[in-house]
Length: 169
Length: 169
Image (cartoon, rainbow over all chains, first blue to last red; front, side):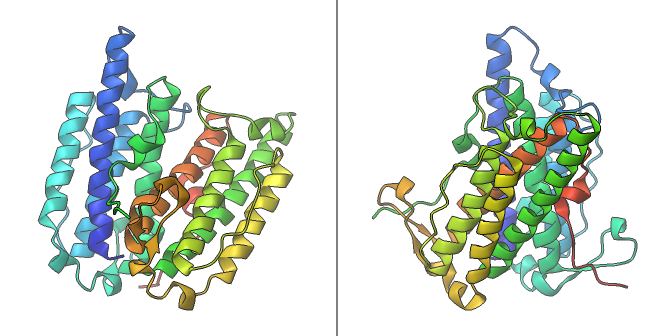
């Protein structure tokens, strides 16, 4: 599994997330409430709300692509409040992920990744992907999914997984 | 990132999950309720409860290790009802993961993985890891975490992530 595979998996999953938001909007319409009510929903008073879960998922994908691809991460301020704004945030993230090509990611396993929150310490590229990017990315998208599910949105596991490159026997 | 790296990540994360259960038990004691009440907790009436989220996370790790390592997956019947039984389930899973060695996983990327639920169709080993095992594994552990978090257990992101092989500057 290459680093490029992981970045494409993040992109696919963010596109899945957009479809969960479509289903959330349908649910809101059916129940006659504003979908943006769900943007502020959270599972516990001191847990991130849906907006911040989506922002965080986008950031995990963005920083992984930037750090592992040797690119400057673009600034995406956390100003979103509505579903419409979150969709734009996801699109900005996906556009950036597109600019990081397999050639940029070649040798990423040995790249020295020193995000600010490590305070000068660092992780090998492979370790960053494995111990930081993948768990954190899936943590935040699953928490976003869980918030919608807890609020009655009709979602199932295949919505979470999305398309798979299945081969015929 | 090798297939062995992914299996070790699953093992580390299942060990993290055991520590969330320790914290859940402490929370239950502090609030004078039985921790096993949380075993049946769920985020929505038609969502898996904590027991089934843990069983599913274990199974995703077990089947990934078996399919990618060319081993027969051991049978672990879904009979658990209590935290104590779930801990045993996690230990059984971890013991199996230990038996799958890097040499078993060499060449896993091109292995033909045909789980029963694909009805005769199949996925390349790399695609199985990327599109099935990793998303599903992290889905179930995060849902287990979310159930505890929603029920007041004091957990933070570092409990989710666990140890990281950080290097000094």
